[in-house]
Image 1: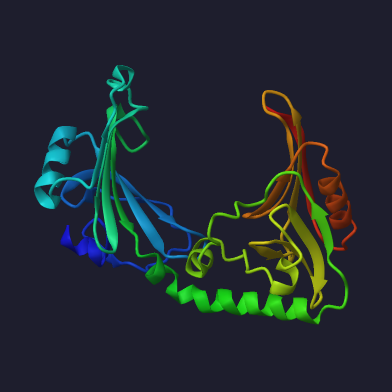
Image 2: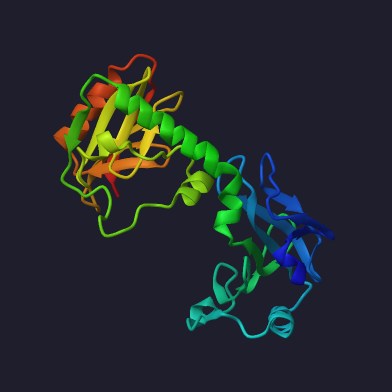
Length: 290
C-alpha cells in the first residue's frame, strides 16, 4: 500500500491525489489493495473539490480477522485502535466492533469492522477500508487564490459602501472567541462561500452580533468570523418552538449560520429585513424542537 502516498485506487487503476469527479459518489470496485470489495464510496469536501477519501466496502469473502492481520503485517501496529466492549454489538451488522487507523505523512489508512456481515444491494460487507488524503494544504492549494480574491472583493465593497450595516444582537454566542479563526486553506477547500469578514464590518461586531449590509450591488450577511454574499442562494429561516429541546431560531445560508433563543426579536427583525430584499428567496421552516 506504499502508493497511497500518491493516490487511491479504483480496482487496479491508481488515481493521483487531486483527482476530481463531477459527482464523487459510489462506484463499482471489486478489489481494494488485494482484498475483495463490493464498491468504493468517494468523498470530497465540496462540489468541484478533489477526492480526499476512498471508502471501500469489503466483501464477506474475506474473514474480518484475516483483513486486520494482513493490514498489521503490511503497515505495522495501528496508530489508533478501538475495540467495542459492548456484547450487544457482537453479531450485529449495525455495530462497528473494531476501528483501527494508521497515520502516514500525507495520508491515512483506516479499517472498521462490523459485528456481523452487513447486507447491501451489492452483497454482504464485513467493514470498510478507508484511504484518505490528509494534506489539507496540498488539497486546497488550487483554490486558495480564488477564495482570497473573493474575500478581497467583499472587503473592497465594504470599504466603498456609504450606508450603515444593520446590526443585530443575539443572546447566544455565534462563535467561541477562544478558538482560532478557520484557516484560509480550510475555507477554500471545504466552505468556499464563507469569505473573510471585512475589517470595517468585523470591528463593529462581537461574538454575539451579526450584520446585514449592502455593497457593490450585493447584499451580505456577516458575523465576526465569516461573510456570505446573498447571490442566487436561498436563505433558510428557522423557528422551532420548545419541546424536548429548548427551542431556537436560526438564519442559515449554506454553511453560514447564526442561532438564538426561540422568539428572538433580533432574528425576527433580521428575517423581516431579508424578506424585503428584491429577488432574494427565503425558505421558512417551523415546528417543535424535538
